[in-house]
Image 1: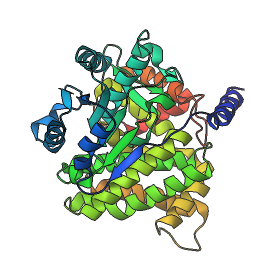
Image 2 (image 1 turned 180 degrees about the vertical axis):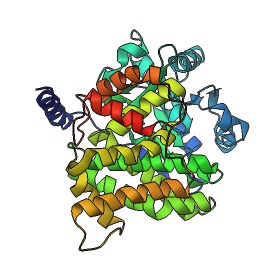
Image 3 (image 1 turned 60 degrees about the vertical axis):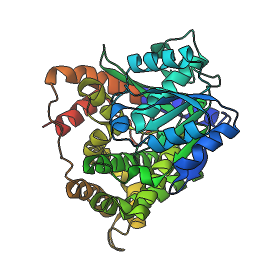
Length: 399
């Protein structure tokens, strides 16, 4: 009966989503597109912005062209660069105070998924000043416009510039959860490949696998549309064709450009089609141990795909055909397994481990409970798992 309830819930949400006020960000794309942003902001009549970033970004000067551009346009700015990986409620509240005390008019998220999630959290609090972040947890709790949000991804993976979700961590309870609302979709996004050229190898690899996880989980789920299927297919093909090159030759701007596009498309796919148990498990690992989200996804993905079994043979065989894996005479099951093996091979090529170290057995019951509640009943997964299944998966992935 519980599985019937889950599928019914997903069916209702799928119908309702068709009438929700979806929008897509206006894009500035290509080499040096970052330089176009300050005059673009000025043309919108915006005179003061809060830039949300992290100290890794500010310490290497990656933001300097933006700052110089804002200064030349006469746009005042305040920088909040204390965002940590898996941003916390405290991060959001600190950035919110800066926004309000400096009378800012817009938000600029500069960095990976963490600064973008933090900026979205600030936007949610501005839209709903009488609600706390925990009170906004879940679906459709914001429902009011946030200030203009400009998203500038410096990695090619999270796709947060194309999503309606903000992933927040509670540093007290070690819980990591999503705020999901159409209002959180960035209004504008800058896809400048030059921002990703000097990424460390491990960031290129894990964020790239994060994007692949988004594309695959969206594609195999049960809430796909023709549009999200196409996004997932395009993203998967781009990742298989460009991630190894972006990893081994980071200055290849074609590969970097294609990976940025793949991350954006995968984000656009999963923000409507949702993700699955890979993400539910990964969020608990980020909440408890601050394991980077892309790394967790990369490790977990092949285990979950194998565990799904026959229900994913057909869609995974289609992805295998897409990227040229397998023979014409192969069965869907054989093609599916070859696709999973190709994911493992990608991980191996990029020195991503096969297991996650440091998982404490005492934490697993709480993580199982949280992963179960995150995924069910919302995520339209190919196969609904129970807590016993999740215990088995945690046991598989731990070192």
